[in-house]
Amino acid sequence: MKRSNKNSGGDGRNGRGASAARKESKSNGRADASSRFYGLPLPGVKLEDLGGSLIVLEGSDGSGRSTQISLLTEWLESQGFAVQTMGLRRSFLVGENIDALLEENAVTRMTLALMYSTDFFDQLERRILPALRSGLVVLADRYIFTLIARSAVRGIGRDYLHGIYEMALRPDLTFWLNVRPEIAFDREFKKAHSISYWESGRDMSLSNDLFQSFIRYQSMIKREFEYLSNRHGFVEVDGEGSVSEVNRVLRKRIAAQLGIRGTHYHPSNALSHLWR
Amino acid sequence: MATVIPEIPTSSEAPLEKAVAPKRPYPGALIVVEGIDGSGKSTQLYLLKRWLEIGGYRIHFTEWNSSPLVKSATRRGKQRRLLTPVTFSLLHAADFADRCERQIMPLLHGGYLVLADRYIYTAFARDAARGCSPKWLRNLYSFAPIPDITFYFRAPLDVAVNRIVAGRPKLKYYEAGMDLGISLDRAESFRIFQERILNNYDQMVETDRFVLMDGTVRVNKLQKLMRGIVEERIKLDQFAPKKKRHEAKQ
Image 1 (cartoon, helix red, strand yellow):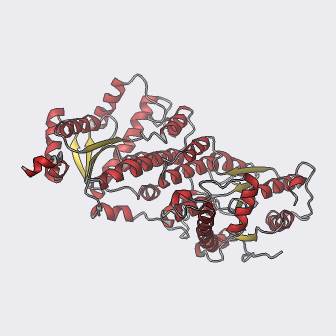
Image 2: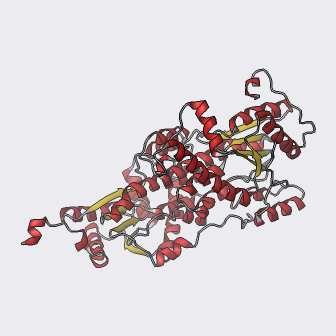
Image 3: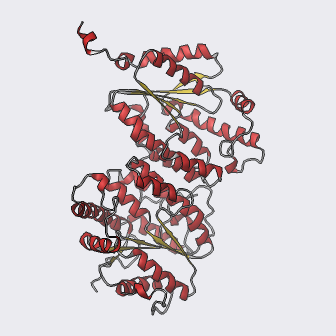
């Protein structure tokens, strides 16, 4: 399998500040809690007791994120790690409100961006931070990077977006499951027999042809991810490989992060249907 | 206490610069009122609105926290006390964004005089009192157009607090700042919270060019003053009712 893992250090090949902060926190022996945020920490959050690990999977629809998260959860649990998951639109506060907004054509880009950020921070404060305090491994099915990319291609400033998310927690590992838009299209169509309005960027009037619209939109998102990957030091994984191949790459990298010795894994009967 | 990592820059300075020399790429105008609860701002804006309405001017009135798309989420969050300082702030920003993108901006481009009861300064004063970083808040609202006039109604804390406490059976949880755990007594919590907000407002008078209005002045006298300032600063002619084509010819 061709592996486009440009980054072996995990964080900040290009991010000057990030790598500096990393070195600094490592020299203190234990990670300095405030360096776990991009900028200012969240107001009212006690930082001293944040343990656990935050592992992010990013990638377009059809890149295999959800499948991999199911498999990784089982593997980690078999290794004795408790897992908490998060994803977009899953907050108790506004998850369902966003679902409803997406059904309407009334919603505009800035409103949607800020509803998603509300959804994100609600999950961060109520689900992720408590989980990390209890020493859990958090697996995030998409993170701030998808939200930044989607808004950035719609013309909202990158600095503005990074400013909103400066109170987000810096992941310990961010994987980017990279697939070509054409492959993502095939996989999505096979799964749903249609292409989602938002995933094809139809609000952006790119093309009346849905295939063209999807490809152009996903290409724009992909360019944004290339920028984000440089800035934040993603671990790029070739998402076009088979499920088991991709899973092996992820396991190896996560095992190194968490100090797990063996990376052998075969899914249980409950998940064997995913093992293609 | 926090190390600010330079990796993510924020445009905190930009809004202040804009406040000094606003660029207005639209023919409309924006008048906003700000001030703590009980300062008399809503009464005064209502009277200003009536004056302009009766005169037939092209105006639109918008108030804080009223977007139909976002309102139900905010209401639920408040009722069930789910909101933290950050999600409280973001939900109100989403509400504002919806009104900004679907009402305020199109109307300013369409040449309307827009009247806003509370604006971004409410968020700056209130969310900062909840512990959000002022720099973060400035960035969050940096998409908002800068008002042509910002009236800041200022009444002494006791006057404002008594007006609210006397008129309301019970102060609401977030309204009283109960989420901050300042005091278990609602009235006392409300007072301390309002005091913090008042201090934050006061600090913006110069940086954001507020027009200071004394909230203890009699209602009709204060309204006369307000109308005078509007006439002086806004070319009201351009919002006057358009003459019908055949009338204009005559």
